[in-house]
Image (cartoon, rainbow, N blue to C red; front, side, top):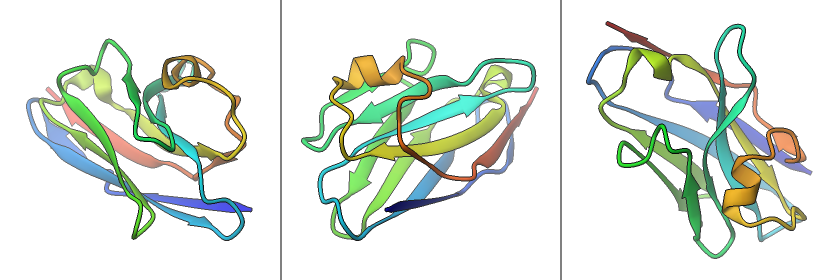
Length: 128
């Protein structure tokens, strides 16, 4: 079982920054592919950033050069540093993880629903 809990969502103005955190509890699996996804009202869930067990990463084109995904493997925390936030970044952000997903980070980014474990989400709102 893998348990995920996000935090760090907030309301910010355009151009602001936020760091999302996802606490990962995995008592069975030590190698996980993990990612951040987001869903805005009326839109499909989309991949934002993915990092695999070896540290390879992939980003959605819309967030490249603004967002950074990272992980603390000792404390089992996944991060998403978000800079220069724009109103179109407004969404519920979800942390996802899977111990068996046999995809590259780029493939996993576009998978939407293939991850086996999901957090409850944290809201990010960017005002103009």
